[in-house]
Length: 423
Ligand code: HAM
View 1 (cartoon, rainbow, N blue to C red):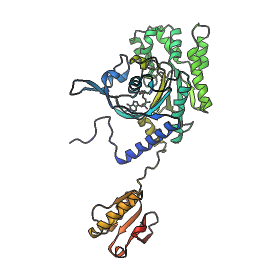
View 2 (cartoon, rainbow, N blue to C red; view 1 turned 90 degrees about the vertical axis):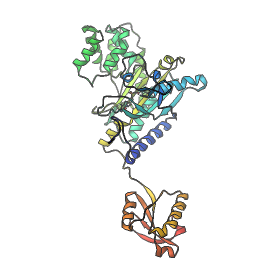
View 3 (cartoon, rainbow, N blue to C red; view 1 turned 135 degrees about the vertical axis):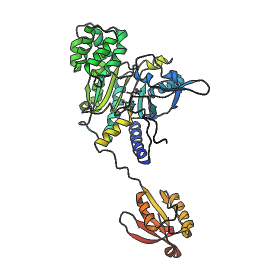
View 4 (cartoon, rainbow, N blue to C red; view 1 turned 180 degrees about the horizontal axis):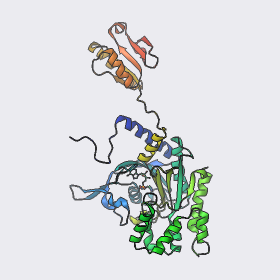
């Protein structure tokens, strides 16, 4: 017997869909309040869109297959490559900046753990064509706005921000060759999830000398932008990435969000296409996985054959945020609600009951009708379970006078009302 969905996949019973709809509508509301437009793409994409040559986990997690025509395809593990493909396809005809959002379902063959499933919905916000760090501030501010509207505050979550270019500069100053940077980022991304000796071993396995590994850990102990600056001044390296990071934080402070943000050098992100500022939002106790994450990816479109186009974006999954809101008892009470349940007393009254239901619907009410014939007590209990505000009982005595019994389910009050006056 097949008893459940495949491992890592979810069924959405009506109560789960109520939660999902609430989440999606808040994502949409916040996206629109920041001026983003919704787009969508196919769940199934060409496999080659996702098979970047790199040490990224996501490439090994593809749900890929061959279709009947012999094409290599994959379920999308993320939306950003689709976005890049869609923008490249339109060439320069799309006016810049492009501010788009989407809520795709994504599939990754993950090792299952708390907050990680093999399928999730991911709110994506992206800004294409803006070089200024105002773009980073915009997407981060939108994510924070969502969390605030969901009931979370400064004491619940923080934005941790860094900059890949800054990290590269710091690591270079410790002797790390540039060609090792991307692989080292994949290892650094595991910090906090894997113990320090295991991290060291991973770096040694990349061919880093013991001195270089020590250098990486020294850089990872940098706790502020001032400290980072201290390591760089006098080394003849560019301070551009440092200034860029400062500007993201400065712009966020203009939005009144300074108290939500802090610099954290160990934020690198698991995806290798990020080129500059990167960020992740976490609950303050770091009990859960990242709530969301993103950054600047200035080379991705070019790597797909588009021109040089700057881009910034974030992905925000439904799993972790639902866990956090459930734990903090912040999920709204998703009661079922229906305006009317119409109950025919017996089959004799069904015609009138159906006509009444239809006319109430035409007037804009949500109406359910008792579909089988059942005792009144049972029918009323069913109406209560359905979340009825009012019940219209079509019974023979009242019907003889052209009336139905209208019951207010909150007060229990009943009165006979002419059929035409219901609703
Ligand atoms: P990502 O960090 O791989 O980035 O995923 C973004 C968010 O999606 C995560 O922070 C988490 O909330 C959620 N997520 C990812 N994988 C899973 C999973 N297996 N189960 C549950 N939730 C998950 C990206 O995907 C980038 N494409 C985001 C982006 C958009 N960057 C620029 N634009």
